[in-house]
Amino acid sequence: MNETELIRNLDLFKGDLAGTGCKLIAVSKTKPVDLLQAAYNAGVRIFGENKVQEMTEKHEALPKDIEWHMIGHLQRNKVKYIAPFVSLIHSVDSLKLLKEINKRAKQNERVIDCLFQIHIAEEDTKFGLNEEELFAIIESDEFQKMENVRMKGLMGMATFTSDFAQIRKEFTALKNLFNKTGSKFVADNLDFTELSMGMSNDYKIAIKEGSTMIRVGSLIFGEREKK
Image (cartoon, rainbow, N blue to C red; front, side, top):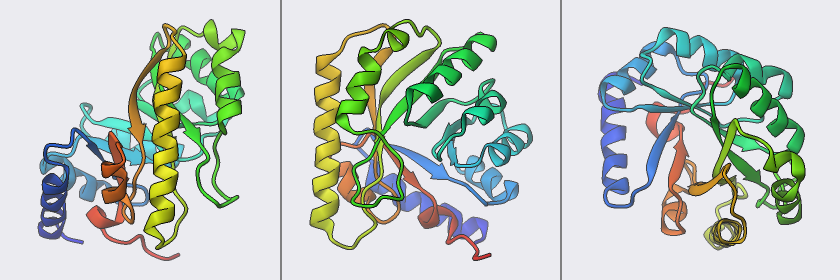
């Protein structure tokens, strides 16, 4: 992947996203800093990582106006390393994790924006809450007292399949849950404005189904190298 190819790829997304209000998160996991710098030079300001150590190293090396999004499964003992700078955590899948984020955010005198990760795929390998678990967290006394997290909405990953009808059904279900949750609950730490769904293989469907941010890696930076 060279800089010319990168810019060409980014230009394609500018066309796909024009007029949609949907934001592009450039998923930069495993990619070298110089390639991220080239993307930054081309106008990208939001990067998504799924490993804490990699994200902290890139944060140190790259311009400080970048928004860093944690899109991978987050272990509670790693939250402290990203709490000083992370812009959005997409992968909140338990009350215990949320409590840790709130604790570390308070230590850093910050309010950290987060998304609840919802399990919508027909795959057991993906993390996420169901509707009952989501509502139980929001209704809990512990959540109601959290002052250093702000839940901005939901994130979900569709089944990895070529069956577009299946993908659309899962995204529609997530959008419906997003609307239901946003209208059902009111709290100071709830601000349901973001719906993170759609990746390289299904982002066009996600945009049509109401996504406000898509997470795209390979179509921007090229395929990850096999180890």
